[in-house]
Structure formats: C-alpha cells, structure tokens
Length: 86
Image (tube, rainbow, N blue to C red; front, side):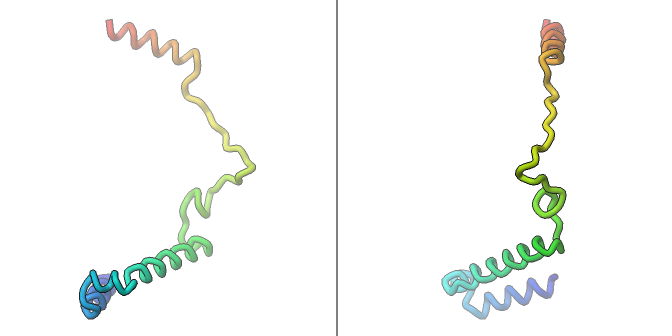
C-alpha cells in the first residue's frame, strides 16, 4: 500500500503538483476509476455491504416493524418518572 501511495504522489509531482493535477482532470479521472471499481465489486458481490447487495429486503416486501413504546408501558414509564422527580 505504501508503494502505491508513493507512486500516486510521484505522479502528481511530475504533473506539477496537486493544483495542476486538478486542472488537468487527473484527480476526477482517478476518483471515477475508483468508484467504478467499487461498483463492479458490489455488483459481482466481491465486496459485501449489508442492505446494499446482501441481506436486503425486496421493495414490495414489508419489513416487520415493532414498536417498543406502547400505551401501557408509556403510562407506566410516565408514572415511574413522575414519582422519581418528586
């Protein structure tokens, strides 16, 4: 990894620095290449991201939702909290 970083920094230096690399569109090109490589990894499932390309819920399928606050436990909590404040 360190070798790759050095290689990129040297390439930027030979272009005349970071501002020149930006002006020439080199930075944007590298970012586009990295995004494309990551997207291909996701599509081929070489990179797993939960909820994106693995363990997803189909759009027409409703995910079960469970509320942890019900009327009965809310009133119980409120009375406990009111007593604790006094």
